[in-house]
Image (cartoon, helix red, strand yellow):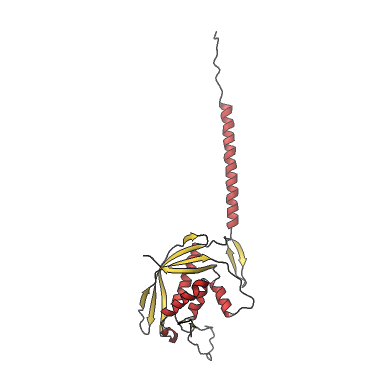
Length: 239
């Protein structure tokens, strides 16, 4: 007869309880993550919006200081092209039924304090911040050949590179641009390239609704600023 018997412990119930607790914790974590992802997806879900002209588009809500990289590079490319592609050639207002009694006229330009710029460059200037706009348009006037306004000279901005926007801080970015201003004078269809390699600094802005009764200037300014962005500095690119 054994005076002392060693009773073996049964760990099976303990294991089952611990396993059940772990599964419950994992399930709770999954539920929380699913709810969080659902909330984010819902907040970023596209919404159908109808424009004033009846066209319907889908939009995604973003913060007041958020802009997509595509929107920023598109804005920079369009604005710089408008500022540096010069011509005074007339444009027909109705291609399908032109009025032969109306003679199309060359763009007479917009006068700055020392020179003239094309009307399209002036319009693109509304995409610049107010403290930067006037001095930069003066520089554009100094660069614009006078023969642009008699139709014998024109230019295009030939962009080779627009970098991805680099965030500086909330609502501010910089974009590197490698480009050339190609000037065509008279019968020279080859053109003279002038390097224009710059770093363009951009920031988010609020956009104002166009007034119900608006002037041509107000409509132009609103159109150029509808992207909710403005250029506030341009400096030489360090290559």
